[in-house]
Image (cartoon, rainbow, N blue to C red; front, side, top):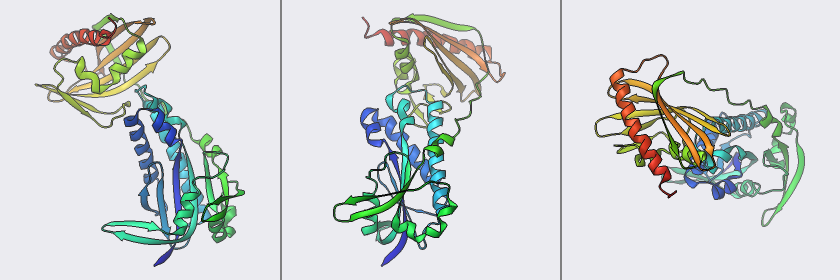
Length: 353
């Protein structure tokens, strides 16, 4: 049985280039995060029919989305999408291509109205029909932007009397496709909406009071390379003595992302809290909690560029939020840090000989 339905497709622009030119694991996770943001921004009771790599297929049966609903939904999804990209940019501690180029991604929308058929396969419902084909074909078009909403004349004709209820500025165009013919549509650019998305709020930096418990070593390796090794939690077992394994909230490394490090006799929780990258220096700090003991503190890492292949590396223990470290715990951490510092130097220089 054919049903009348609004078809709504948000499509991430730049997805193919993003995946092909960056680290696959991190780029895939970022795309999944962004798709979740779009799903969570569904405020018009749309049904999610499919996830198609870089796009989501939504539909709603019955009367078409009003112009006001459609424009609000577009702006809400688009704004939340770019707000999340700004948070990724602010909080990323990873320097891989995926994490550093995520802000280049953007979003476009196709909106159509027509007939669909719901095909039920077990507990899954698939929407199909010629109007679904038309909506998908329209994702490839000649609109001179990667940030827009495109609506077909078939949808526009259903809501023409409501056009004045949106602030978006519409331009007419059409596209010819094999088998389905010429599809007239209107589109509105979303550049102004993107420009209106505020920057991510500044983070509140942890208060760190370092004392005499600070170590340093010179390492024959570039500063940026050392930083990348430090923040790669999957490599920590190479230079952290006794580390048996770990788990984290997500594969991409961000500030505030929780990690658990498992040792034979203790579990330590780690949360990156601060990151400052300058031309000749880098600072990275992480709060640690010795889980069974409730002991909390800060490990403060600093890199100072001494030359293209030479870096001074500092690490120190400090208190956070005014909570003093018990002396036995601090002394034990310092002894382990001294060993780990030597292992870190050895690991980073192993290919330099």
